[in-house]
Amino acid sequence: MARPEGRAALMHAVAHIEFNAINLALDAVWRFAGLPPDYYRGWLGVASEEAVHFGLVREHLRTLGHDYGDFDAHDGLWAMTEKTAADPIARMALVPRTLEARGLDVTPPMQKKLAQAGDLRAVAILDVILRDEVGHVAIGNHWYRWLCAREGLDPLAHYAVLAQRHGAPRLKGPFNLEARQRAGFSPEEMAALSAAD
Image 1 (cartoon, rainbow, N blue to C red):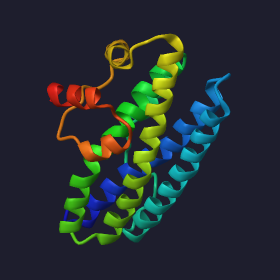
Image 2: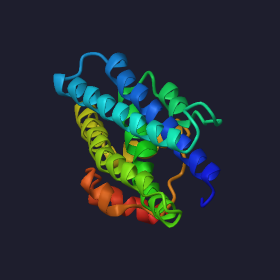
Image 3: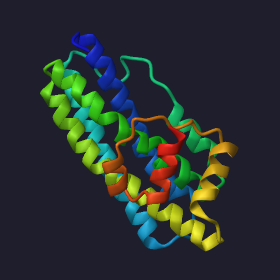
């Protein structure tokens, strides 16, 4: 992480996640009709914040002598978006509440490594991203529970069904329990996370 190339590769990965997150939020708006107006307002707000994140990371990446597109990138977020295209409950469960919530867990250790490398600008950018991602995950939590209630589903039990059905990654700790709590995970969900670790 001390080498500029390694930091650039890491920040490129973050930029790619943020770029995908813009499209994920907009897809959630476009794909699922007939939901309350607050659903659409919420996800449009998420898209706007993700665009700000992408701009911050890309700007910093350029100071490291690179730009978005200079490194290979994975498509894990978008692959899950495609898998959940027919089911808004699965989308809310497995994209914001699973894949994006993972960012709550991995950001603080990433910040520690970047601080040790002296990249305080990257640490500050990740502070902004972490703060906003708590809110994004909270929106996913809210609408997942709302949709489960509408369909008469138990959120905790149905999550396990959806994770298995769509091949969601197994969650591994350490977990950022404080951030997850602020993002609206229930005590039962937090206990299930700890038990699975």
